[in-house]
Amino acid sequence: LAIGPIARIDAPGLLAALDRYPYGCTEQITSKALPLLYFDQVARVMGLKGADNIALRIEQSVKAILTNQTAEGAFGLWSPSSGDMWLDAYVTDFLSRARASGYAVPDLAFRQALDNLRNQVNYAPDFNDSANGGGEALAYALMVLAREGAAAIGDLRYYADVKADDFRTALAQAQLGAALASYGDQTRADAMFSRAARRVNALL
Image (cartoon, rainbow, N blue to C red; front, side, top):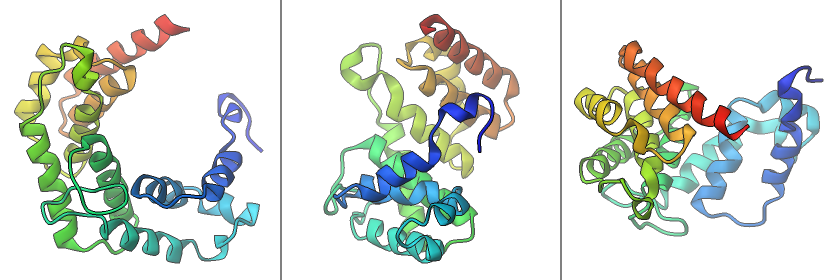
């Protein structure tokens, strides 16, 4: 039973839909496993297939994902390949959260994933125009890196001070805010959260 604004989010329905998804690319494996880190009790109550052994499913997902990792740390959808910063950030986010929840993620593979994100951040193109993605993948990568203490604080402050309004979405602005908060720069973090909130409110 959910009461209040969260009642509009059908967590059991979303879990069931993900569980039924027929494909097994890296993104889908991650999308199936990530919520199980937090909604394992919901999954058990729903009686989802395999819900009686959530830990095993997460461990298997980690192993399956890592089969699609390149030597440089990037992730491909169906085999090892590189070039998609958002996918790399998403998978590294999952691996980071799994490690924090006590699941075994090989140290070398995780370090390579972080190194790959750092390299992509270092060579990220300017995103004044929407053709370069509006900074969404970059903001996500910075948030993941910052949570692991692997982001450069100078990068975070540059994007907050110079590029804050160039991020195309409120989510990207909030993710940069979360990255700054991870490093204790609450003033800049609050400014980014405020920008994100204003953008969301403008859409309501």
